[in-house]
Amino acid sequence: MRLVSNTELLQEVADLEDVPANSPNGELTTSLHILMVGDYYPPGGGGAARDTRVLCRELVERGHRVTVAAAWRPGFPSKSEEDGVTIYRIKDVSAYLPGAASDPQRRHHPPLPDPLSVWKLRTIVKKVRPDVVHSYGWITYSCAVALLGTDIPLMVSVREYGHGCAVRSLMYRSRQGETICDGPAAAKCLGCASRTYGSVPKAVVSVGGVFAGRVLLRRRVNALHSISTYVREVTRRDVLNRRSGAASRRGHRIIEDLIPCFRTTEHPEESDDAVFERLPSQPFILFVGALRRVKGLDNLLSAYRCLDSPPPLVLMGAHYVDTPGEFPAGVTVFSEVSHGAVMAAWERALFGVAPSVWPEPQGNVVHEGMSKGRPIIGTMPGGMTDMIVDGQSGLLVPSNDVQALMAAMRRLIDDPELRTRLGRAALQRSELFTNTEMMPRFLTLYHRLAGLRQGVHH
Image (cartoon, rainbow, N blue to C red; front, side, top):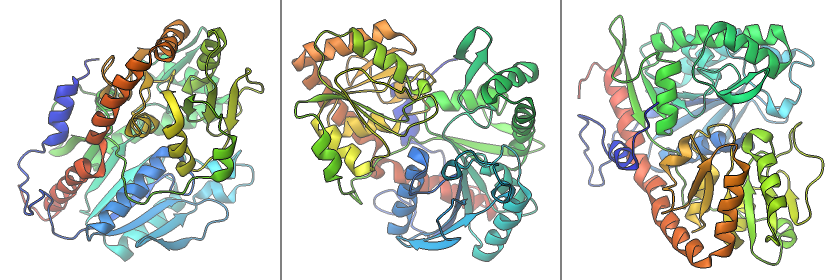
């Protein structure tokens, strides 16, 4: 798989073809109504949900109307208002089935259209009459069906691999172990999903839903937004079934665009004093993310054990079934900490580690750490290569390579001048992934889609 260079990335982020701007800062000024649809919406839900909220706030501040439809979670009202955004939390069929979700707070939309979600989304669409619908996650299948028979443009953000991979991770689990998947095939995917889920019926539903979903998406989606070059190439291969160029099916063209996730200096979150007080008094190595094997936690702990007299290691993230029960001496663990506490921790860290085993789609924690001037050790392949220039703004190591990870950690521990140089470059590069840089790209794409609905060719 060919990945574009960093120079090509910046060029693609900077340009969208044939769309004029009509304001001094390059943003189109006509007010739009955007319906955001997602598997999750904060509080909770991880980086994708937080990215969606940031985008919603930025749109409202620029004078646009935003409505959100997200999967329901216990304890939240079916309709609420936040920061000028109307939020609907909708139940799918599984919400009425006892035991359907092992953790109700991490309820997943099924990988196929859900009839109850389709009906509720269609009702919301008729009520709010959006100019553009912007969706992410498996709820997109319900969204696409809800929009059939309408001319409302549908834009899908591809933030991970779930539209081409029934287990979402792009990790192929065979009897010999796990490797990065080289593409879908029915028998191969059924075997992998069965081993991953521990259930043949669940595997059949997941694989069948994802395979059928590709046809639905190619028919109804108007634009695909990928968050990294790696995600875009995988999506072309596994969802669009092509390598490059425009996707056409019976005259239907899908616009492709690459817009990385971004951070914002607005809406600062308060730190958690209780967390701050528990941080080590001396500078530490910081890991932020789900405390899972797929995030490279086992490899990180193995590498850390091999270091002589290392600085403290701080882990911040949610526990899962594969979270280790014990941790080495020198490791401090925080579970379910606020985003504000995470950002405060970056300011006291020596450097960060993001040793994902799976090909990380982009890695929000990477540009969060970089925005605090901290060098990050990331892994490749994956979306981190768009942000980290190896040896210039951080370090990259092959995924699942404990020795390479340990060597990179030792290098940053032993060389304060290198840490300073990489951290300074990381801070500078992080400015490419901010609301100031990215919001004009989103607005241009939204207006381009709205123009398609009106029959306007820019």
